[in-house]
Image (cartoon, rainbow, N blue to C red):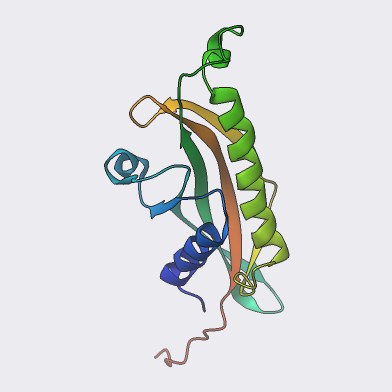
Length: 162
């Protein structure tokens, strides 16, 4: 059975292979502010939610793990953003589009196993991608998706019960 550390390493390799991701991190959201060193970033939050699936055929063989994937980038005020109010006063609209596309690339690479990294897991359930605004230190915007990965549990109990 694949371990959590191995799955996180696969997320890191995906981030390294993507040309638009300059930093990777993992942990609770409260740790983002202290750890991000460059932008845009992929931050993975393991939700520690484990579902163990039961079927009559193979008993408890499927384990589901949830992860929140966040792709964020730094908001910059600049020229050319003066004629739209709200998010249009800086590069937030560009960031929303770019981080959405980057997140879709990561999700597709997992679903299609295009980097041959996720051959031991399968993405299950529908995924919604939601934007976040002015987070971290107030100048980061991006998109987040919560995904569920199903892994096979090949480990059978070999300890006799008495």
